[in-house]
Image (cartoon, rainbow, N blue to C red; front, side, top):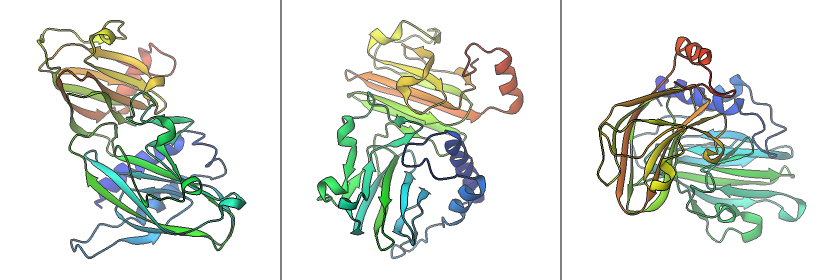
Amino acid sequence: MSVNFRVQLYCLLLMLSALKGEGRYLQENEVTAEGLFSLLNSEVKRESSTDFIYRRPLRCLDMLSVEGQFIFSTDRPQLNCAAYFIAEPGEVISVEFSAVDIDCRRGDFLKVFDGWFLKGEKFPSNEDHPLPLPERYVDYCDTGMPRRVVRSSQNVAMIFFRVHSPESGFTITVRKLINPFPCNIISQTREGSFTMVIPHQRTNCSFSIIYPVEIQIEELSLGRLGSNDAPVKRSVPGCGGTGDFVELLGGNGVDTAKMFPVADICYSLKGPAQLKVGCDNAVMRLVSSGKFINRVTFQYRPLDHHELQKLKGNDVEDFCFIE
């Protein structure tokens, strides 16, 4: 893992830890900058040899961005634990359980969640995820995990777990798999570019950037006649009825259903269309009726201190600043 990537992921972790109340399972854990950085120090670059398997202990509060085998054991009860997994945008995550030794009758549990749960909010939102909410949870104690391998629908997933006995524990093996049509992504980086494609599917796809950013749309194809002169609409009432559009959202949480609509575009265009969003989280969301192949290409970069101060001076909302 390069130094630059370590710094970028550290910033992501620090931003996530700032979202208070990560769920009732995490309330008793104190998260510090030093603690988060120690998580990164334990992650190592994968060897080129296919025989190499990275192994390390799994912590009660953990963040995993590499493939490998992670073993949880403890010398005292751990009642509020979670591990967050994140992969590259074009990947999904496979979690395989083995050597599970927990006492469900005593109140131990081990649950996989397809997505992330933070501050009482879920990513992806209920309306954007392909599965109904109950099917996004896999509970070892309810099912005995007949499916030893659980695969995520996007580049993030997590587990909740609780153990009372020092002798309890389990092992997970994390792998990353290629996703040909990435949908509902949390970015690992503060800047970059990405193309989202929805091929004749009635669905919504979001790309979430957990920083105040400038987003520039380079190209938008909505599969029907468009106009390069079509204006970017702000806080519109108009695009929702078209069935195919892209919208930019801003907010301080991760659930797109609870975020503020900054702008949307209902017509194909060959950019650039540029907007700055001073929220903790900015989301590019592509909505598709399933009638067309929809595609959006965009770039993003973090806002510097001067830009943030300027946006605050032009504040149009209490919780977030846009331009």
